[in-house]
Image (tube, rainbow, N blue to C red; front, side, top):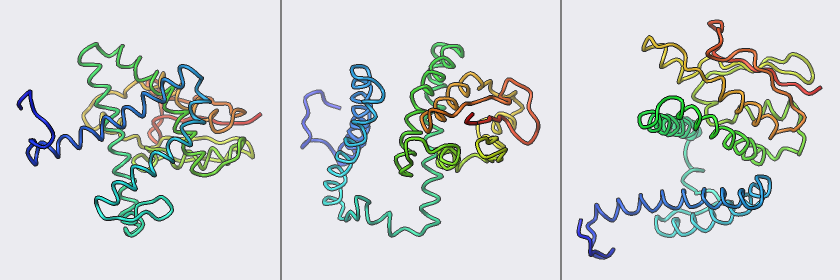
Length: 246
C-alpha cells in the first residue's frame, strides 16, 4: 500500500479492512483506559466507573451503527438480536465462548513460542487474576445480585461464565452454605487427551481464577481445590472446587 494515502483513495477491500482494524483499536483503547484508571485509582474504582462508561459508550456506538446499518435499538439492544430465534441466540452464546477460548489459547501460544512455557504460564496466571474478578463483577451486574448474594449467587454466576456453554460442569449441593463445583468436560483438556497428550497443568491458574471469582461475587466465600491438573483426578472430572461460607 502507498505510504502517502488518505481514506478516500482506499479500495473497497482496504476500507473494509481498515474498519475491522478500527473496531479492534477501539476495544484495546477501552481496556487501556480501564487499566490506567485501575493503576491510578484502584480496581474497585475502575470497575465502578466502567459500569457507567460501558453503558454510555455502548449506547453511543450502537446508535451510530444502527443508523448506518438500518437497525433499531430496543432498551439498548439491537433489534436483530431480539428478533433472532432463541436457539440461534443460544448458538451465538456458544460461538462467543468459543471465540473467547480461541483468543485465550492464541495469546498463550504466542508467548510460549517466543518466550517458553514458563513465561506463558506466568502471563496466563496473572491474566486470570484480573479477568476472573472482572467476569464475576460483570455477571453479578447482569444478574443484579446484591453485595453479598451468598452461595446461591455464586451458583447462578458460575452458570453464566464464558466457558459455561462450551464445557460440561456440574454443581453439587453439600449443605446450605457449601457446594462442590466439578468441571466434568474441559474443552482444552479433552482436546489434549484426544491427541494423546497429558493434562495441561492448570492448577496454578485455577487457584487464582476460582478464588478471585468467588470472592468478587461474595467476599465471605472460601475456595478449596479438591483436585486440578497436574493432580490425579477421576474420569468424571478434570478439576473440582469446594466453595463455602463459614
